[in-house]
Amino acid sequence: MALLLYDNPISSNALKVRFMLAELGIAYERRIVPFDLPRPEWYTALNPVGGIPTLDDDGTVVAESHAILRYLAGREARDDLYPNPYGARAEVDVFLDRFAITFRPAFFRYESPALGFVPGKGMLGGEPRLDELPGVVEKIAPTLELLDNMIGGSGFALGRFTIADVAAAPILFRTTKTGLDLGRFPNLAHWRETLLARPAFAAANPVT
Image (tube, rainbow, N blue to C red; front, side, top):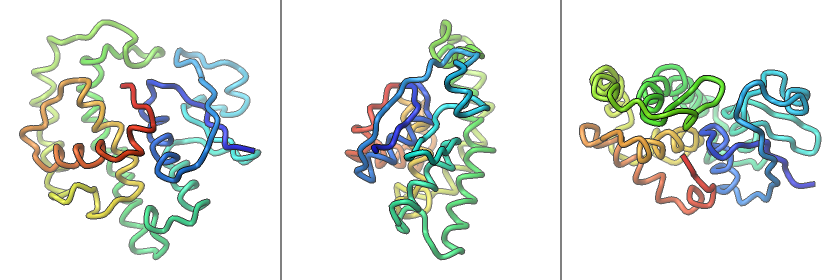
């Protein structure tokens, strides 16, 4: 039985998983979950929290995008993407948590008005609020500068391609849709260029 991915095209978290599956060369089926809240009962029966995506691997159900990335790397024994030595693995885990807790919210502060985020409907749920963007740029600049300094100029989060890059790629891609200028952050711009050039990212069918 092929993997079944419960997905939505505009979900950046689902895009992470499609990118990972493409990198791994794994065939899978997609089942689209409506983005509007509340989520359908058939979906919350599978994932009570209702977040998108969810992966069903022949009855093994995994939710939360970073957990799915870890699961798939382990399933395929890809220690290059999620290292087996605990020290190297911890480095990836620390980056994933830092990105989710500190850096992802900064990008979201810009995405929300730029792409008309509406709670319960998601991105593109309403009209863009472009008048808010100049003020947001200045507020998030120190956080983006910190990230720029952390990742350096290798084109990868940790100097080599790992699931940390898979997790960040959809957010970097989204800056091409929001118009967030990364000119002040050359390492972020190079990181984005490196990841978006990977054939697997294009194969993941990024939308927004």
